[in-house]
Length: 98
Length: 208
Image (cartoon, rainbow over all chains, first blue to last red; front, top):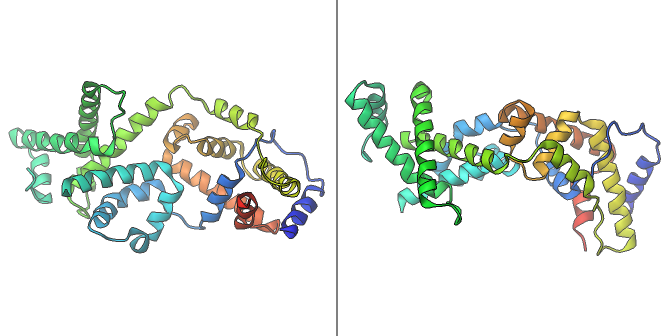
């Protein structure tokens, strides 16, 4: 961790140009979790919507979506809106099967 | 109605007169019966209010289904495809209601006011490291992102749904996701150029 501290201190001492905007207080862990999960290529919300019915049916039939459709699963981890809708659809399909 | 095949649904909805009316009535039932499982009714909400909401969602969904019938690809049951649309319509409306009084400026002001960066339980050395990294992240946000990306990221980090952020920025959710993806890639690239990784920083903030 000393290496990390040293890197940060060195960077801060470089006298970069002033920030373009007043620095906000970033929720560092949240941002880092998002960056850690960021992939060069990700599905968009429209692509998720197109796949959602098919994936939900596969999931309620016991399919492992994270293995079958890893890009779909990764998007859900990044996008609360799509995750909320997918989980809602899953609840309906499970209720229909019960 | 449960026994209709996909082809039966399409034929019924594409027909005219009583045949279409019957298919629409059946489909409305499917939507109204399913919605309570997707959208859990808040205890405070009156059942009649929820039923009215479900009817509105069903009506809006049926209009969309008829308009986009030709885009159904047959990759799922037809009713699952319809319910997917209904769920989106319902959550879009609920998000709009829930966030209607919150502005992006307000969220940005809240974020700037919340200057709690370092864990007060951490030792002085750890607290200093956390504060240094937080300062670095602040500068990265200011230098790498556009004003629009910063606003969007701030709002999403504070829990505002993408749909609502997009509405306030005059764009659509899909375009906003791409904007945020680009922002994340920029920040990740900058972090790597500084010799750091997200995992290392997470470890710094996680360790007790």
